[in-house]
Image 1 (spheres, rainbow, N blue to C red):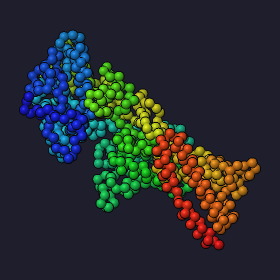
Image 2 (cartoon, rainbow, N blue to C red):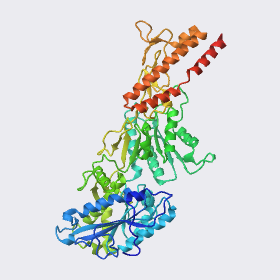
Image 3 (cartoon, helix red, strand yellow):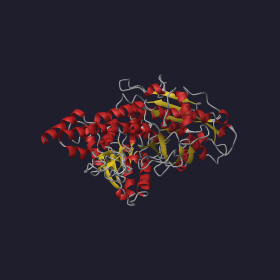
Image 4 (cartoon, rainbow, N blue to C red):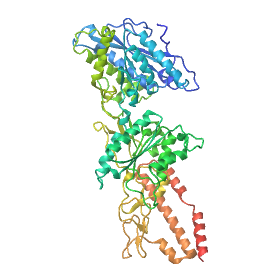
Length: 630
């Protein structure tokens, strides 16, 4: 084994991935050496004996944390090498002969524990390990499998020095448009700037085209976003640009999470008061507390932490905000698993979704692949596993496309010269293939433009995150506007008590008008109208009866006013008790109808009870008022 090649790792990929900041920095180690050795390799330590087929080596270096970004490639190499009776893929015009078959060797190293190393020190290690592996496998190394986004930049310089294609696993467009990008930099991830676009376009279709107003300028769009990471910045800027191009009323609310704008000693991303201020800019409380402005805004937020996401959502609820839609970066992340009560109807986006039907000749779907890798590695993979599996498949198709007209091509001899390798680069630029990850082709910046991102929306229960775009892959249509953006029906009103107890922001939160009140038109009013003197109404009334055959109760406030004094106070207290009972009953019924679990219903009702003023407080207040009037 060449001295520059690191020794084998003593931990599995999964075990490596959980090393933390208190663990050792970890010396570089070789995690995988899969497939046969290539003729002429100076390192044949872990590989099988050289095969009759030509062997092309794939190199990858990752930090310890990126298990999904490397483990999918193991499954891909195994499948490719097993093709054609264990002889590998066929390359060239000739259908037979040993030199028309290509197998792959995967050499995958871990450069260190990135949780225990300063970023710059890790970057230096990564570049050195990758450069050493490329030199050790110079005769057969054809491609570099990109690292995860944390370390992706460290792949660029070694790839350029070795003149080898690197297929990166990073989404933001700036990576491919920066000064460090070069002719060998390609990107497998679809553009993360496409994540929110389906929501903006659906907003135009559903909220504007199907509403009474045909002017997009009547629809507010408010966008809150971090400016310190290109992902957060560019993803939300794409929503801003698209909404602006559609003619919406757009407000961009940009903030530096690492600054301390109010000078209170807390960084912005940890400062609840600061974050509440951002929420107020996006959706302030109404000037007139009796009604909510129409139409409700579409809200987009590119945030990182649970505190940021939850503070925005809670503040919008407290403000009585009735959004047409809410799109969050965190909606497709781990945040969702601990915030199910907040999820109904939330929109999000990502690279891939398990409902996508894309397949290849080895697996019928991405989910089937994940089931397979779960058995191999002992953990449930994610979209990064699908991406890292698809990368060697793209390399295989690049070889086949490059040599498609050659009889019995000598692949390794072609790779050995700069002119020969440039054939692979030029073919890669023009490549247009189907993979288990979806269509793959490269735009002018050499990043995948085969499809847009996977747009998702949580269902009304908050239990299923459903694929809503691309349209040819969607499970369901997008719900737009969300129930919160719809007017309450006549006979109901926007229930402020429900807003205050933490109901999902995007639910309707409408309640039937109490007896003695009514609404006669669809509305977002926060109170119902009192029945005129001498008239009555029942629960959920759209009008009041004058008494001829009418049902319901008379107007309690009017009776209390007529009785006056202590008697009136007692009537108001009784009415308050009846009102509380009605609210609790109606709220429990609504939760049951939504399919909430028993613990969720009990918790929600308890929060509603806590939001009521204690009867003793109400009694003292009313008796004080009556005594003052005696």
